[in-house]
Image 1 (spheres, one colour):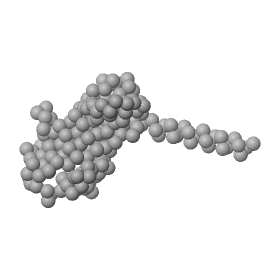
Image 2 (cartoon, one colour):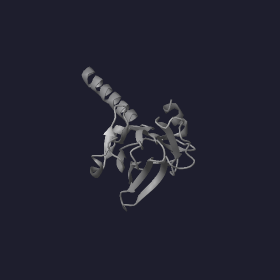
Image 3 (cartoon, helix red, strand yellow):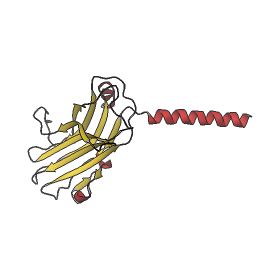
Image 4 (cartoon, helix red, strand yellow):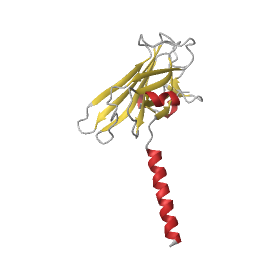
Amino acid sequence: MAHTLSRFIAAAMLLTFAAAASAQDIWTAAGITGIVDEADGGLHSFNSTGSVSIKSSVSRGTLDIRYPIHHLGPLGLSNCVELRARLRDTGPDARVVVRLLSLDITTGELRSLGTIDSNRPEQTPPADLTDYSLYRTCLNVDSSLPFDFVFFTYYVDAQLTKSSGSGNPGLMALQICTDDRCEGAGR
């Protein structure tokens, strides 16, 4: 009887911890964890900092990378569900565009829920263009149910573009969180 009770308690604890672990309310990904398009295999460089960039030996090109979002728990009510990216744009010869996309499993419709573009005029360039800077945007989602994994699949699509040898775009990290949780996660 004592053995059965201890097994029951162990199983209950395991289920409790598993449920808590799967209810993540922040999604993050390092640049090096992305899936590089097969055609772009010779362009990318995974760096020791956790970032991804276009190889310095490539004078111009566009690198396409995707980051699947397998699960994201309830985010709670918020004014803004944010897409955040730590990226590097070294000037007119570099650009990074990051989009959160939803794919409707039933209809096949692909929809953009938010975009970060390092070349948008409202983005403030960092003082040192070789640094990685934090960019953010509020997503176009319903804050009460921002992600519905029953009918949709989600992924982040990133494009790094280098238009001359002096460009050096890079992507270090991505994050999805609510405005109140982002501040605690971004220290």
